[in-house]
Image 1 (cartoon, one colour):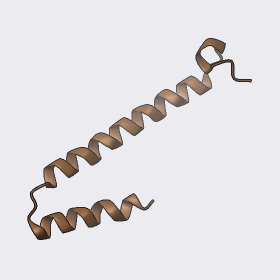
Image 2 (cartoon, one colour; image 1 turned 180 degrees about the horizontal axis):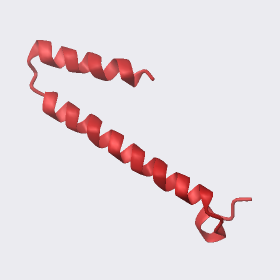
Image 3 (cartoon, one colour; image 1 turned 90 degrees about the vertical axis):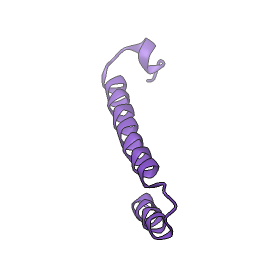
Image 4 (cartoon, rainbow, N blue to C red; image 1 turned 120 degrees about the horizontal axis):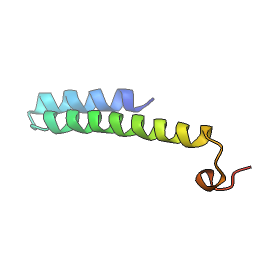
Length: 59
């Protein structure tokens, strides 16, 4: 939740100070969102199927 405040604040500071990292920051944010979404889907799939070898013998 704090990231919703930190990321835009860092972007605003970057724009005001003309640091030049806008593109890198946006690419990083988008890449992170995609990776977390994929990991979430994979974990959901693993948890929902009932295979002992895949779930690590979870009870």
